Image (cartoon, rainbow, N blue to C red; front, side, top):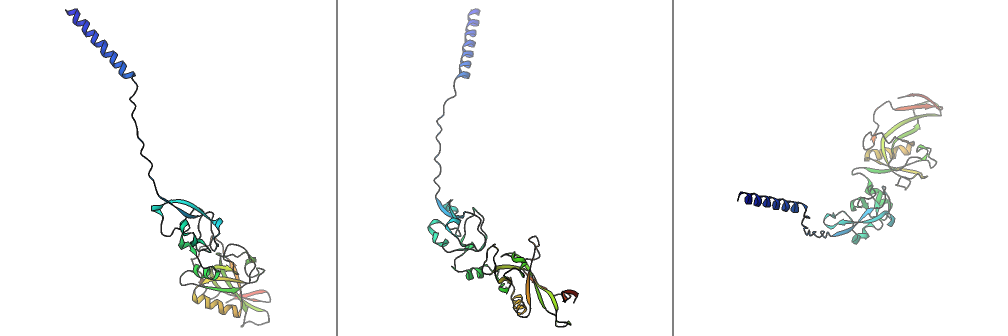
Length: 252
């Protein structure tokens, strides 16, 4: 009887071990995974800059590419393909980087350069044109371009000096922004007889008077020079240099 119990116990252990081995070696059950369908997001074709668009650029078809944009994220300032007419005859009012959406507030639709220039002026400022030499003698060799910063120097006859060739040199305006050279408002060197500067109303009056009584010359400032955002008049004394017979005689 005792041997029979031992035998049955052995058989039970053997059966349990076999079942355990079978369970460990059995392949994992295959689960049927159902993938959720991708959400159907409505999109809209939005106008983006195909390349960097500088200030004053007249838009062409080559400047515009179309990019699909989630319809829910299309903002009011963006231009969709259904509104392509908004791009016809438009000028770039603010610089647009390649790949950025072309927004309405960065464009101007006037069809004429004069309207564009008025739109680029900062509030409260004015545009005043002064004569320059087409060979660049009064504009840093002709290298001054729109958006450069310049000082304005006045050269006039010294009424208090003696001698026929007595002249005075005076800086009358500092750090003025150049809006245009001739009728060119983009960064491109041209031969022109006028330079248009962005100034305050008082500075505009000063420049108009100065160009009637003296010769004006533009002095180019370095790009790294960040002396204020707008031009400022020179009002301190002791800035007039006296030149007689081509020789600096002093200052007052």
